[in-house]
Image 1: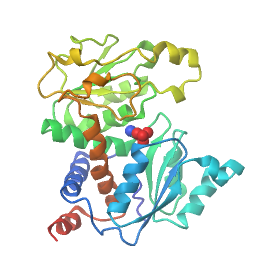
Image 2 (image 1 turned 60 degrees about the horizontal axis):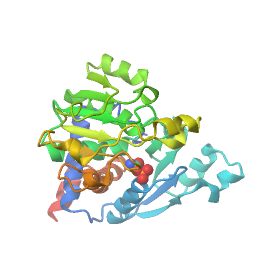
Image 3 (image 1 turned 120 degrees about the vertical axis):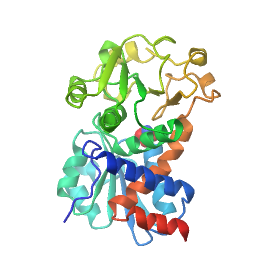
Length: 313
Ligand code: CP
């Protein structure tokens, strides 16, 4: 049987990405449907989440599915020593699809190889976050009118930030110029820079984060420093407030600039930025609902044509 799991965005073609974005647009027109009335969606969150879990669960509910799952592994039998394999096999008995966030890199890939039902990776350690990437791409497309030829600034924790790793891979189809803005401790890992070289993706690295640095940005993608990934908390304390975007830094930026952030925010975007029309992070999180409705339907075998026909009903 074809494995329809969504583990990484890396193997998605340009056509496939555009297809899913078109499906998300259909769900934005009409979020409430009965396309998944008979389905059960399991959300297994071994790490904390607000947006990813709630938007997947909202998506499932708006599509007519029922939701089971947990938000804290301490209340499950994994706290008694049950393995991930056994947990996945058990939940596969109950649900048609599993949305899983796990602290181990590669956990979603492993689950997809053993589960009889499809797995959606809702974030695996510092590795990948493909559903976030779909909503990021949708947000970029909505705000810029295109995904092609954009100057995209990735700022902050590029070492541990899984959202920037996934976004970088997905953008390979669209001729971006990336600017990696990070302190030495949190630089984009070599494997992703190698990926850029192999796919002819242009990138420039910066350690300064000033008005001048971001003057020609189309997208400013801010990220939080990921405290939970540090083994040395002294190092976290040293770098946690290294870059803070303030409203006055945006005065001479491009009119089309939009500021994205996967959220949660800690200190890296000052609150005075929220009122600026270039701030787009809350709308970006709303776009997560439409992108995740598209992902659930696609993984469960519902086509764009079926979704379009349903829009007209
Ligand atoms: N962007 C994101 O993954 O947010 P949560 O951790 O709240 O799900």
